[in-house]
Image (cartoon, rainbow over all chains, first blue to last red; front, side, top):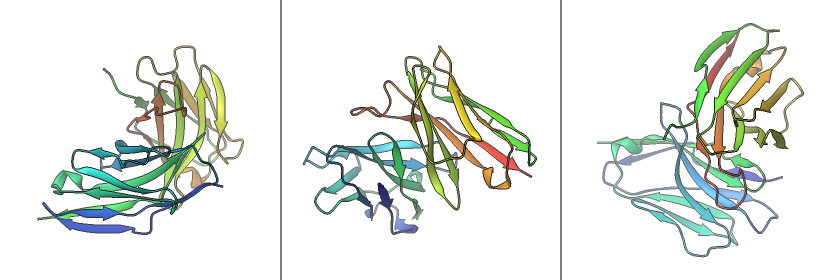
Length: 111
Length: 115
């Protein structure tokens, strides 16, 4: 069975600083997709960034970037220049025929 | 472009009752998938529908069922409600589901409380 592990239940970062959220996954598949979703208090899940497993290049979306290590089955999210609006729950997710989520990391952004 | 709409946003039921939740996908999206989010179990996949057919199913008892209509709107039903069914139920839509680089767009969820 596919599992996704987020070992950091909570993280805190100061505004304008950089933070990295960790995610590891377990799979025997070779073709899959990885995602980071953000869930603010409004509850709506918002896609932050995605990575195709067959691509070696790490995905980047503005201040958000990933470090994808396929052999290590690791998929961490780096948020640069953190903003107050980044405060939310962040979920790592793995997808083949269904979407499997990690348990989430609550990110606090302080002044 | 309208997003994914879930109704109702909040509802309270008692044990033994049944509930129906609705999800209207983004126009042109033919896949709708459902997820249950609880503090204890996190986010769990319930099922996915595409063109009125269930394509994938998670590990939930038969009390949880769903359907999709010809306009791609989907409903999920939970019968004989239990306290443990209290959760946020999220639906997501996409053009073709879990294939390729499809991106899922989520609704704001329906918060179900079972008393």
